[in-house]
Image (cartoon, rainbow, N blue to C red):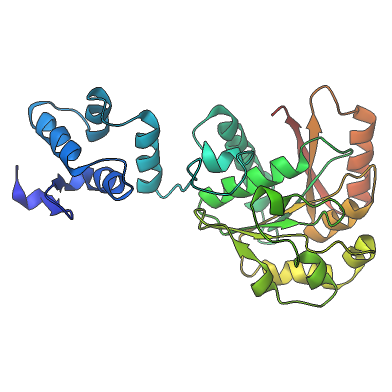
Length: 295
């Protein structure tokens, strides 16, 4: 082996520079032993194959192990099942290469074109729906993860102060959050939580349920808070209550400037979706589009 093209790794194995990232990542993650790495390298000396392909052929690694290493190599973080308290409903965090996450990535691309990448003012987006159980919180959580995996510094705000769920999905304390900030009883830097394992993602939970969520969202402090957060985050995703039950989402969308309407196949009624779009337009916010949630 050409010693000018190797980098020493802790232990007895020396990996070529071209394979250093994958091999080292897997060794450090405890997914590959030094002995197995040496076996792969010995095989590679006689065959013109990639490190990962050889590992699969020899049965030393699984496809999931290779995907894990590639994700780390290309700075595409994701979580490992059983190693995080984040709910497995956040599929973009656990299976970023699956068909569901791929569909969410395509949605992310459309949003980049239609809103986030269009103007410097496009930093926040409200996720709304006409009725409950159409998947707003699911879409909001997974979109936030998808944007963070793109390398965008992303904040997910649970603005549904009536029936919050993001603190449950991301396994965090909900005693203080947005409700405290809107009532001028907290500091945003102490109430925003970073998500372990997803370095680009932060979450602001809803906080204690207030008796007057609609009034809090109507205060000038709400749009000012979003303006302040826009200096720190490239993307801000807001979860919201159903429009059919409360008008909170109208204020949430107005502050964000834009909204994405979530519908569910076989459940959403066209008339209600149209009403939701009109409500957003009345708030002088932009309806970016609708998404059909079939998950």
